[in-house]
Structures are given as structure tokens and as C-alpha cells.
Image 1 (tube, rainbow, N blue to C red):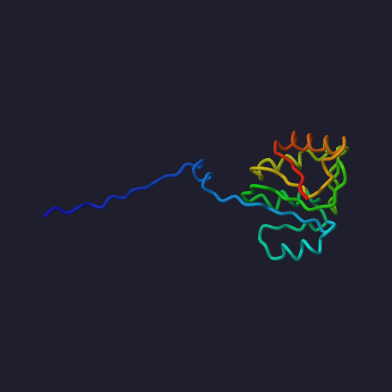
Image 2: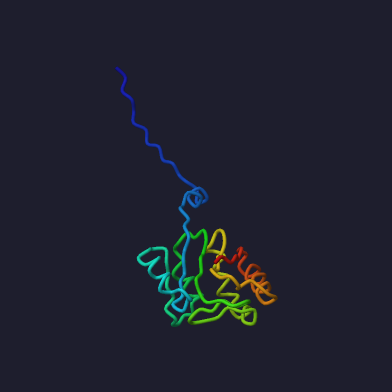
Amino acid sequence: MKFLKPILVVILMSPAILAFSQTYSDFIVIDKIADNYAQLESEFSGQANVYWPDGSSPNAIEQISITASTLQIENLHIYAPTKPGAIVFNSIAITTRNLDELAEQLSVWSNLVTHQVVIHSEVVFTGDDGILLKQRLEEITGLVFTMQN
């Protein structure tokens, strides 16, 4: 009678395969001065994929980057007050006038988000300032920026 020898098989997975198999999810940022903050707080309270910038230092852009640095994000959703050409967080506004100053901070998002950044607004990318803001954000980050109500 022949005995079978046990064989140890080790499967090594490349980082590319591991990255492909990771789960990506949406990450939601709700600024405390968002127009419908109470409703959003009620809707998203207790969810792990929601972040509420606190209005202190560092500014909201850096807070988002730090908080999201260990996550696999497909879409970044931002709820903050807007006007054509401006996203206004409690701690900082993103406008065409200060994009050059914020470019380094915003460029970090390109390593965090795999698909797009959704600004929940009806007007942020309207008018000349809005169109320019969208173009510059996409140039700086390499991401697609959209608006959705």
C-alpha cells in the first residue's frame, strides 16, 4: 500500500490582484453648515462611511484626506454650501481664486478616490466661475467632478 505524501501549496497573490479584489465604497462628507444639515444628520447618522468635518484646523480638505487615507473610495460625496464657482466648508472655501494655493492638498484626493467626486449642489459648476472651477479641480486631481442635487 502506497502512502501519499502531503504537499504544501502556497499561493502568492500579487499586489495588483489584491488591489483588484478590495471592496470600494462611497465616502460621504457632510459639512456642519450644509443647508439641510439636520435632515442629512438624521439620514446618515451612525454610518461608518460618513465624515463630519469639525470646522477646526486642519481645514476640511485636509481632514477629508486624513480620514479617508486608509479607505478604498469609489465616489466621494460632498454636502456643503455652494454657489456658482465655490464650495464653502465651515473651515475653508474652494474657489477659482484660491485653487493654486489648495492644489497640493486637493491632489491627495487622486490617490484616495477611484471614480468621481460628487458635489451635492444645483449650482456649483454653473456659470463661467463654475465651469472654470470644475475644469481646474479635474486638472489638479485627475478625477471627474460632477454635481448632483
